[in-house]
Amino acid sequence: MITTDTIVAVSSPPGRGTRGIIRLSGPDSHRLAMQVVEILQPLNTGYWLAAQVRSVNAPAGVIFLEKPRSFTGQAMVELHLPGSPVLLQMVMAELLLAGGRSAQPGEFTARAFCGGKFDLTRAEGIAATIAARNRRQLRAAENLRSGELFRWTHNLADQLAELLALVEANIDFTEEPDISFISTAALHRQLEALGDKIAALVDSAGRWEDSDCQPSVVILGRPNVGKSSLLNALRGEHRAIVSDLAGTTRDAISVSLCHNGLHFRLTDVAGTSDHPSPLGLQMDKARGQSLQTADVILLVTAPPEDPQLAAKALADTVEKYSVPLILVQNKADLPAFTAVDARHFPWPTIRVSARTGQNLDPLQDLITSAINQGPALTGDHIALNTRHRVVLQQALGSMREAEKLCSTTAGDTMPELLAGELRQALQALGEISGAISADDLLGKIFGRFCIGK
Ligand SMILES: Nc1nc2c(ncn2[C@@H]2O[C@H](COP(=O)(O)OP(=O)(O)OP(=O)(O)O)[C@@H](O)[C@H]2O)c(=O)[nH]1
Ligand SMILES: [Mg+2]
Image (cartoon, rainbow, N blue to C red; front, side, top):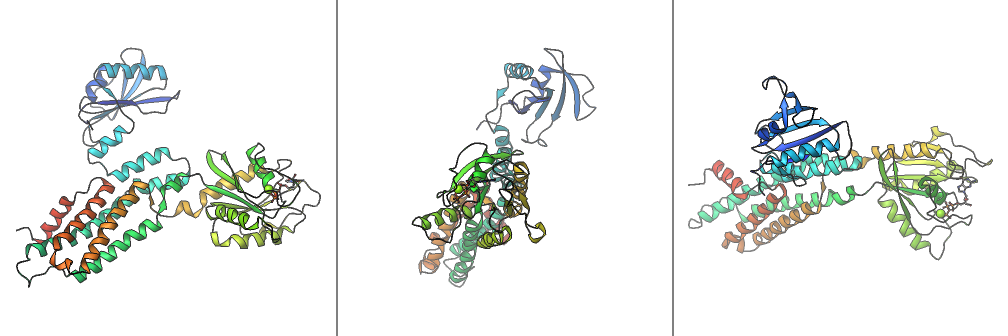
């Protein structure tokens, strides 16, 4: 990757806006900027300088950033212009003509990474933050950006490097059987503990791919309460079959919805029934799968059921999922409708009519606030993407190999094999951040132990 030329890009969102921003990064940034704008005040007066575009009569604001204290670590300039796409294109063309290069997607972040501003996981976090479409994604991205995974991996690599240093010391002193820096038994024990830590992280960490999915809201209720009608009404189009026959819906049916800028998936499932049916098992399975990944569950009741009893029974069946619930009393348009006393329930309750559309908007408000408050959003869980997972598994594989060597005589007779496995594990961990080099760490460790003779 070339980082020695000067890159230029419009960094404000495409289209018309009140303000457009053009960013420059590289050694020529200041010179290029001065070719397209004229500064209207003395250069030493401040951070933000009033200026004017030279080729047309348009005002501009300019920020000069010196290396290494900029985002990329290079000399940078930000040109703040009126948000006209035509003006931005014009200024861009002038900058390119003056010797700038159009930046590739993500190239500013890549330069910051190359300049040692942050590690790969944090760069991934920045990209993920920009791409986040809901609070859950934002939360997972924040974790990456704040260096949570980086610190975790770094800490583990430090401990592993220390073990490797001891094994290497053993190799240096093979001629002297009385000197052993670490016994294979102790090494085995410590490797096992470190390996278990990695395995536990891989198991418990959220899957990035899941946080990438839209939050899932599942509609649960007895047959005929109007679950499918509710899905159709919220979606505003006919997607699920509705009929007055109990047991109409058999499969799980999902639609995508967006309310107040929050995207989520709404799933209608077969009604819960005590009567065995030929398809009962398969219906239960489909319902169970949907509930398992639900972020919010709507408990739907409707006359003639007793809403209080029905809601309690439904809540009992989903207690194990511990996700936010909303009690939705449907068919409020019917004369037979009786509302529950909300004080008897720990969850939000709302009366709606899928038929008349009553209260559907407030219901969506409840859904979005439940999604935003869900436990998955506030947990400090690290989410791992596929790249992280693969690399951690590789490190774990090598560590488990080393562990095996420790439990055979090879651990004592061929310490080089052990060291090889540990080096591979370190290498893999280093790939997570893109920055840890086994030799760096080893240098540090050897220095500390005064073994480098
Ligand atoms: N009056 C009234 N009728 C409704 C309302 N919502 C649904 N219905 C009727 O209730 C019946 C059942 O509706 P569905 O949407 O099929 O119910 P469901 O819960 O999906 O039923 P299953 O798929 O069998 O579990 C239909 O005849 C609907 O027209 C409503 O808000 N008011
Ligand atoms: Mg249905």
